[in-house]
Length: 599
Image (cartoon, rainbow, N blue to C red; front, side, top):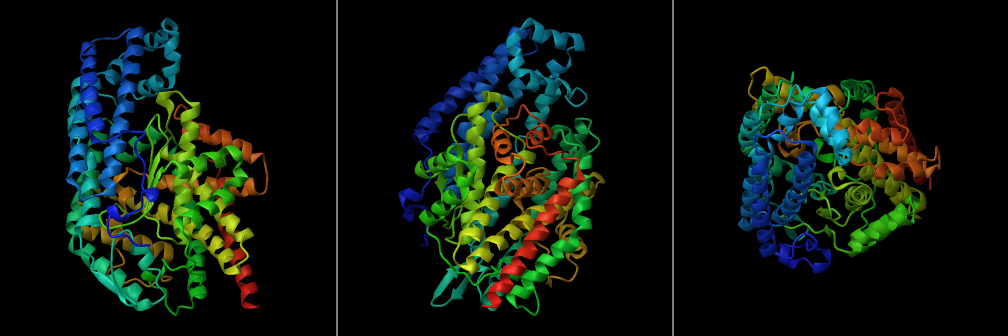
């Protein structure tokens, strides 16, 4: 069913945020309280704290940080559900001022910690045993000794970075609600082209419709490419400048040190993608053959390979997901039911709602999910993906101290992508319809190629952008278009026919505002492929290991968390095994397709 506005959506498909705040009045009251609580930090200013004072400071810091997270989730989610409503944007702007004050008043803490001598730092834990609860946090600060500045300089950086999120917010608002992409005639109806129905429209079986939708969208995007490139240019320039100020060799060097992962891991990822680009090309060649196309255009790549045009209600999607995830055990399934029964998801698309999907979590309440469900199989996978994040955080929140209730992005996507693979496997094995079975395998292939090959290609482009900026160059629309062209030609050659609008994909890639997030997908999908396969085949006690892995909080570095699964990130065999998984799925698809063709 289609909805033109938020008001038309039935309540059972709307998100429930009352665990966070009853209403905007309660939000405002909490904001005022937090503003007052932040003033308590002034007693610590310009003071060298003893071990007891450090404990008291950290308790207060994380109490306020938790409140700020709740305030952000409520205002941000409501903003994304109604981008044209100025109220929630005003709330976000108010919150940003409070967050800046919080950062400024606590900016002294890290410089103070790194000024301790090694003996003084070690003695803190001897003097106050309670600080053991904070050891990982304090050690992470202390090891950044070369990159933390004076209290005054940290306050200045806090002021400089307070508008960082504005670049992505402006870009998202332009793309999602300000631009008019026109309409397309389908049967008797004129359908508006929106960012949150774009993929569905590009799946239309009529080439002229796919081409028109893609062209209309691209023409509008091209009109504003200079605005979009300017936003990205200044965002990257800010990151580059902050890295310099903090004495890092580069922005990428800063990222590596903050995530505690060796550059060798990412070089292995890039080399694996380059060495196996023929597997990626084989995927698109198979697509072209299955779709019986003389030429595979960029606007064809969203097409479903199967003739299966089955529509799934939200309730049917929930049922499939619950059955598919039974393999993970009763406790896991009960947590999924909680997500569905307690309205943790906002499902339906409409104009003025943010496109795509995400899960967002605080420190106390289970995460909330915003998505645009389009009643198709891909929509089921989006729900399963975001539910994976939600359940991961349920386990984390249940098993960790408040300040360790989180995980690195280079770990987080394993839970979501494993869910996708398990749902696809369930459908491929249990459906009585061979077309639907093929659809399950097809989407395993899509998930892998999108999160491995495509993510690595775009992550390499992001690295190039930073290197370009670090040389003092401007990141212009022309530079970005040529960059996309260069990498598409390297990885895919002439497998896909491109046109003058084919190289603007960078405009809608919001991940470029997430400071090297894309590699996390490639790393996580490699592990998720191995995990799901071993759970399905009941190998290597993987289910038990996986449940323990889901509990891992931010007190563990990514490589430590992966060791719980028995995975060594530096081992190239991990990536080889993941590529083998992808190649096996291609061959399995060919086999079932041949069976169908001979019936």
